[in-house]
Every structure is written in structure tokens, then in C-alpha cells.
Image: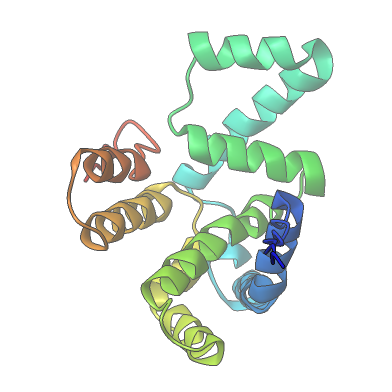
Length: 204
């Protein structure tokens, strides 16, 4: 009697299922980032830098974002794209972030600072990548410890591309050091560190 063996293939999870699983695992980092950003903004509005009018660097990005948002409302997306080509912003990252904040949250002075949560989320991603071998609770504790460093709060109440650019540089250096150095890794490392403004030509 012949015995036939059959291999039952397990269906691979879809990309959506994988994304949902990652989101489920990272919800704590998102919650901590949101609470930290809100707490820094609230404190700074009463006692800190945001209690005064925005500084020059911040205002330059805010004005640029508002002008491009006006172009979006009046002439549409092609006008914004044309403006980016013929009149490029000082920092594409900061202008785009402020513009998105005004588009979603309104034109309050606090709106762009709330959008700085993307920098805190990026910091959370870097910390999680560095501590990927640790249990989740230890990674969260490490992230909370990193948030106690003063530059973390400055990333919220200052609106400039410097900290985001430095974070990209750190991520690129981490990528280069975390695997054997070959041509593909070198290429990925160079392009992970982004020049977020003309004066922030940072590369690894």
C-alpha cells in the first residue's frame, strides 16, 4: 500500500494583517509620544517658549506654509507643486509639516508644534530598533528615559529641521553599524540621512 504524503501550505499573512499586528505592538509608543507632545506643548504655553510669540526661525516656516496653503485653496495642488519647484522652501520638511498641521488642525499657533509628534515617533522607532532584542516593557522604559533628555522636549517646542535631520543621521549610522557593510547597505545608509534643509547637509 502506497502512502502519499501531502504538504499543507500555511497561507502567508497579508500586508494589511502584518501592518495591523505591527500597529498593535506599537500602540504604547504612539500613546506615550502623544502624551509627551501634549504635555510639552501645554507646559510651554504657560511657562515656556510658547508663552511668547514664535521666534524668527519658526515664523519663517509658518509664513511659508501659510502662503503655500493659500495657493492650495485658491489654485489647487498644481500651483503648490509649481511653487516648490520654482521657489523651493528653506526646509521642505518643516514647510510641509507646518502646512499639513494647518490643513488638519487649523491655523492656531500651536498646530505646527503638535505636528512635531512625527519627530517623537521617529525617535521611538530608532529606540525600538536599537533595543529590538529586549522585551517590550524594557523598550518602553528605555523610550521613556530617552524622553527625559532635554533635546526631546526641544524637538516639540522648537520648529526647525535640525533635530529631525540629526535623527535621520543617527538612523543611517545605526543602519550601517547593524549589518555587514556592503554596497547595498552603504547606499541605504547614505539615503537614510536626509538633507532636510540647505543648511542641514547631513549624510552618512
